[in-house]
Length: 86
Image (cartoon, rainbow, N blue to C red; front, side, top):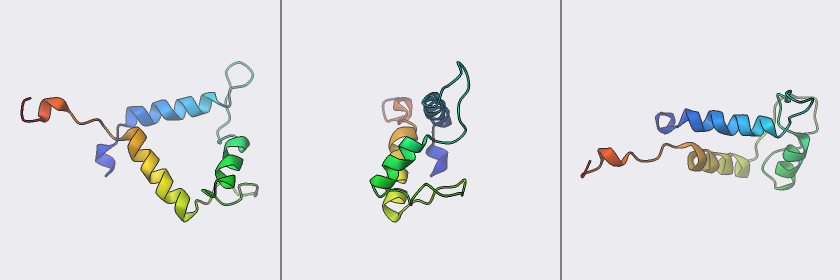
């Protein structure tokens, strides 16, 4: 499963997400913005994020959606050169 992951795309997505919290010219928060976690909670994908814990709890629906999105966004594209004509 993870051997099909394009980690450069993961790095790009993480960097793009960090940009969402850009402040003071070049600083970013290490955690995902509260507005995002609130929206995920409203959608039923995570448990209430307003706790003292530094981790979030995914709902069963959230786990399924997260996995689907992960593969959609980060799986490597098939290499056309390895096909029957390549």
